[in-house]
Amino acid sequence: MFGPVGHAYVYFTYGMHHCLNLVARAPSMAAGAVLIRGLEPVAGFGAAQARSLAGPGRLARALGVTTADSGADVVRGARFAVRDAPAVPPHLVRRGPRIGLSGGATAEAPWRFRVVGSAGVSRGRASVR
Image (cartoon, rainbow, N blue to C red; front, side, top):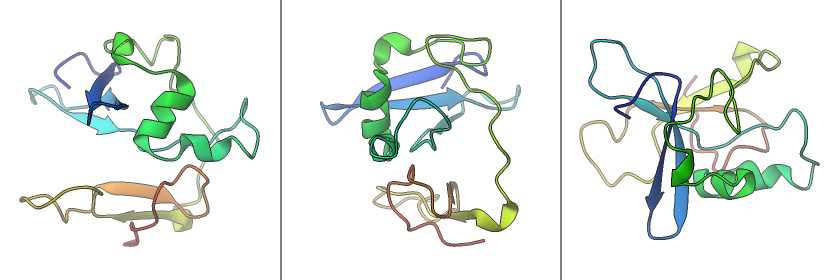
């Protein structure tokens, strides 16, 4: 989260799951990243495999992401990369509170986004437009 923008930040949690974050912050901020909770496959995954990308732990396992990938440049092409994908119509995007927080100042902030009907969504709690 403190590294260069456009790079991966991977951490190991609960002694069993890797979580992939993309460093994304304003230059004036010391840290900032976006947790990738799920992916909608556009190629390389069959319909039965799509659920393996729903949830941060499942996603990392399906893609073979580990802490060794921390610091990888995901814009210019690492072992995995962020690329353009088909546009999502705005009426299919929902946002809501984050999942798995037990309180705090931002627990109910609408910082979780999902696409309605996506196989890459682990839980459907995000419902604010």
